[in-house]
Image (cartoon, rainbow, N blue to C red; front, side, top):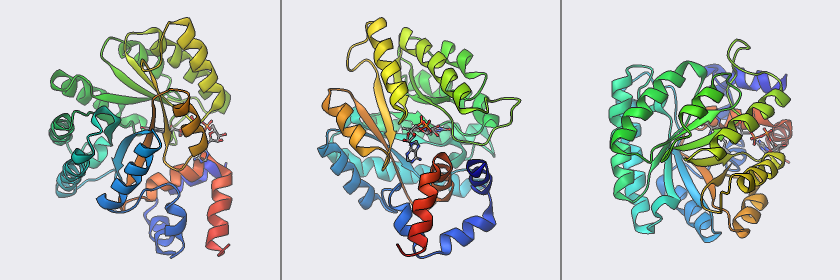
Amino acid sequence: MLGQLLLATSRSALVRRSVSGFPLTRKVVDRFVAGEGVEEARTAIERLRDANLAVTVDHLGEETRDARAAAATAKAYITLLAALRPLELGRRGEVSVKLSALGQRLDDAMALEHAREICAAADANGSTVTLDMEDHTTVDSTLGILRKLRADFPSTGVAIQSYLFRSVDDCRELAGEGSRVRLVKGAYREPATVAHQGKSDVDKAYVRCLRILMAGQGYPMVATHDDRIISITELLADRFGRGLGSYEYQMLYGIRTDRQEDLAGAGHTVRVYVPYGDDWYGYFMRRLAERPANVAFFLRALGGK
Ligand code: FDA
């Protein structure tokens, strides 16, 4: 219930202005966001690299309806990738992109063109790009853009959300050789006509999708903080003869950092999703919605504790 309310307010301009105005909000946001500028992001990325963690970096922003803002986002990614080049992270330093920040709501062709520029810059670093998945109205467009990007940049990945009914079929289509799928549960408020609503149904759907990806020829990216899913992944890896390096785990910056390091210590590739930038509101509200304890943490900080 609280989660649904937070997801609804994640799209409210009024709440965005009020929350952003609290001076202490910044302190709490810092737990989930690596900083506002490229330099802060780079410092966080170096720290993660030194802890044996790979990264996927997200320049925060979404839902733009302004062509200039879309071009500015693409430029921000190109600047970021140039700043990361000297770190020589290769595939361990990829980026995550929300197509809605590149103008997808205005024009698919514009988003594709900007995404292509980012893929080329990532490719120059020996790295790649994963497309985040946003609300269900964008899935067909995102998968269409993915297909076009993969013609030139075959390692481009995409997130698939287990809560959507369609995702089992999407996983089947994307389980072929060379494909990179990040499987997530899904973070948006979706209607019952398109998505499972109960947690246990979403979890079961996650396992169905995971089985298809682990049995397939692609590279599954298991993005979750859920220990039960991690155990099931290990069983499936055994069953389908997948060794370390033929799949990876992904977690969000600031969430379950001990577990990230444990898994990396056991030899797994663990990639941390590192968001940075000043447009943190939507991302931050989705993290609060996922876990009531995060709301308590936020309220305590607002109260100065
Ligand atoms: P679940 O929510 O069931 O949580 C399992 C356990 O993890 C909890 O009991 C708690 O211990 C811990 N946990 C989970 N969330 C937490 C939080 N916010 N704070 C503290 N602890 C928490 N979604 C999407 O729609 N499109 C996308 O492109 C992406 N991309 C993406 C990348 C990566 C790397 C990750 C890890 C996640 C995403 N997501 C996403 C978000 C995803 O859909 C989902 O909302 C969250 O990962 C939470 O789901 P879990 O699988 O962690 O399980």
